[in-house]
Length: 581
Image 1 (cartoon, rainbow, N blue to C red):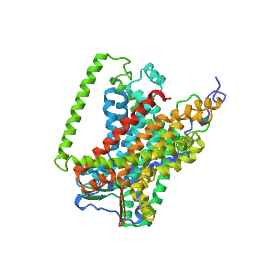
Image 2: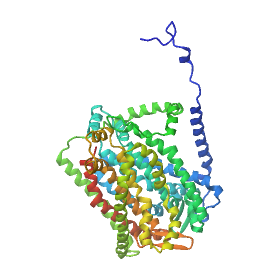
Image 3: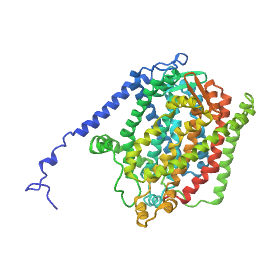
């Protein structure tokens, strides 16, 4: 054994010396202190006095307030992101690991993603205000919940897909090592789904910007509430018809999106590469200056050291829940009996809820309202179909090109993130001016407006799928000199197909949601309205017409669930059984 130093074998003086405080530690520590200070400064505004009858309906459009508005909006966005991640872990795991509950949870998830943000707001605003009487915290929670509903479903679908398409050898390794359910979740399930979860989290975060104005400038039940934020600032500027202030809001939003991408999402995508499952390492992986600084700093390790005993305690404490071993065979008779009782219980709940809802509609606006809403839904459905076909043709090849070339990914990801994250309804006033100038009806223009908020789900999922293709498979294709259409048909399209299906499901749901704000556009004295279900729900929500809100949300849910059942679910099963890597 080699000696460390010195004639007597004792360690050198440098070994005993404590490492000096480095500049990178100072930088990371200062950033953490600044973050904590900013949160403490914002805390009083989150719990300010609030009276519903005297709450302001607009915010000041003085540009000097924009930094404060930007920070408030970012705080809501990240609070909703944290809630979405927690929901994703619980809901997707339950749907993937419990066979009977999957038959309920996935259809419920289809319905939840089809319910528009305004549909949730019409119910939750009053409840949250009552939960925190006299405090702005209730309205803040309602706003965060609305943003959560724009984020959570896409992330849940993506994580569920990763759980159901796990490589069989990893599942067998978890059984052999006798991991507990807790250990399997954190050491296998989360790492194997980290890449699609990060990419879809980035996409969901970007999609939530689209509904920021509706979440901060709330118009429900004939009441108007405005919270300080970029969404409410833009909504006030649009209502005033001030294009200059709208342009300032757009510039600030671009800076915010780029900042969030550089400081958060770019480090997350680079960090998630450590969870890629492949035998040969890619020569050119995504890089992040921020992540490199964090890795060079000792501050994260020092902050995480006190949490290690907590992790050990959880590993030991969760053993009482058993090992992560799913029975390989179950008695057929017991399976059938349990299925019958479970299906009966679910049927009773569904029938009772449907009967109460139909009775409520029948006693108010009449059941004939469903026929009217179904006709409007057909118009919106046609726009959704056109959008999905166009987005598939345009974005699948572009997404493959970006995802399979790390150099292109580094250049294109920030650009795509800005385009996807930018709230397209901020430019609706400019679109209104163009539509009026060229005489384009909103019945056609709504397709373009909906595409600005929904097409990116397909692009991001295809990028995630292409970037997740193992390097050894890529090298094998190059080694066999497989090129052209044969390469696309036998290698690329099967590899990205599971991700495309996930993106297609969420893009369809996002398009239905986007119709709420795309089929009714207001700018100053101009009011454009398209024939469709989105306009129907938007008007019913603004006037507080609960029966029509219920009818509109129910019909939209029927359309979305029917599309998922007839098209997307068969494709989803095909992706699980035939095209999983």
